[in-house]
Amino acid sequence: IYQIKQMSFADKTKILTLLTNILKKKEETLDYIFNYKVFWNEVLDRLLRENKHGSCASEEIIAGYVYKLVDFIHVARRYVSISDTSIADIITSANNKLSINRSTNCIEGLLLLVNCLPTYLPDTYNYDKLLPAWLDIWKSIQQNATWDVAWLTIFCRARKYSKSFDWNSIYGMLLLKAKEFLQIGKADGDHNNNHRVASYYSALLNTQEDVYKIGINKIVKLIYFIIVRKQDNNFILGDPITVTPVNLIEEINISIPGYNSAALVKSEAVELSIFLQSIRLYFYPSNTGNWTNYLTYFVQILIEEISKHVGFSISKKNIKLLDNQPDRLNYNIAIYYQPLHLPTLHYLIGSTISLILEGLYGKSNASIYACALSIKNILSIDSNYSYVLLPILMQAFDKNNITQSHLIPSVLHAFIVCIQQLINPNPIILNYLPSLLQLSLPGLDPSDQMKTFLTLELYSVIFSNITVQSQYNTTNKQTNKSYINYANISTDHVLTNQSIDLEAVYESLSSVWSEWIPQFIDKIFVLCDQMPPKNKEKKQNNLIGLVVNCVNNFLLSIKSNEYKAIFESKLQSYFLSTSIYTSD
Image (cartoon, rainbow, N blue to C red):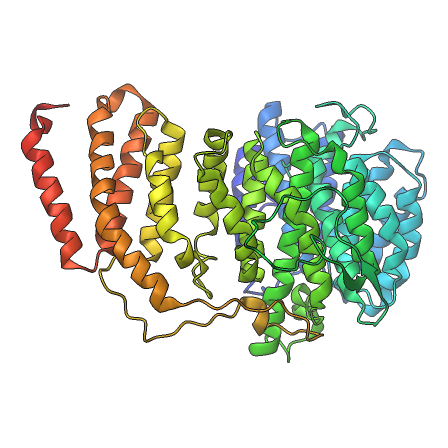
């Protein structure tokens, strides 16, 4: 219907949306052969304005149509036939365009590869034969973000199937590209030093995200792949970071490779740590410019890759996932099947802890969110890091801390993001929950809406995961192991698992509830009294929803009649002393 019927751009857009949604279902493989030429020629005609015939529409409608068309091509490329000449046609056409790199339309060849070439290639055109020539073409044009992102996309796909390409040969180049994409040494918003392709080609990148973030994402994936891919014994001594790290609490006596101790690790990991130290001077959490945000995003993706590696390693060891499936179905997790070299993994995490802790206390919301996610993934990998990170975070509630009001919102956000990782599989949070409940209670302040929002959200998450009881059953002993203990490990090096006295922490928690619950209920009623009429402020309506959700989760979590009675008594007293029935 799409190819034969004459129809408006609006109708074509609807059909493309439907087709894209059908093909995005990766759990199903359809009996469909994608004829890329029809759609690729169509999108070039629309972008280059070469087709003057057919339906007419506004620029906005055509732009929306082109975006959907590119999205469909990108999704449908896995249905390009690998048995006929389609693969050869794509590669030949792309190479012909790329051979004349002085022409502005050479980018069409690269974008043809990005959008139409399937990730899986037959042996006739395997990546090991193609990558050396493509690498030379990539290097021929420098300081061009669009060009680099497109090539990084190709090489990220190639890493899933390549068997003999020398990936270490591009490691140094990737670090240089990372420096360019991190915007080191450039003023905020100053991208003039990075040459661009014609603006109309940007639609073929199939994304509306920041091109620099896309580049950082791809670079980190390739860097981590190069670090973990080789299983050899060629290790070097990696020293801890030379820049002054965040001081650990005096009572903490844990050795962290890359942070406060050395370890025998892979040489590429040491190079990455040195690279992070070399750009450390540009990292200012109080600066909302590009440098800090891009660097925290770099660290976030690195920790995500480590976490992903641990997760797939667990599935490979314990579930034998996809062992009997063909390589084509196995590609997306095969690169993470390598056993974990724990000294290298801990060294990479230790090298980033200082950046994460400083970035968490920055002014940029993007930086705070990226660092909170990094802490979450670190705790997922190995919960023993909580004995280092949590005491530092709890310091923000210290009344003697002169930056207390600035730090608390960031710390509350971190706890909201990480609470589930602090409960399972190792309930570390129980050691700190009594103090956290008491110290965070002043956050329910009607004069500070942001802090109130975060405190209510924190309590909602806590009540969703922990029951409120006067006595807890400690007969079911929970494991003190972290997820990393269940992964496929190549060495015996592992952080010592800290033990938890469940009986003691539950007893402490039980004693806290009886004192804390009345104070919490009083704070909630104060918030209710301070609220203006519903419809005057949109933010106020959001606050009402958070209060309702928090109280609802609190009531659902109560498993003790004693605490239910306290709430009912407080509620009755409040209704008798307020004019709530006559208020708006």
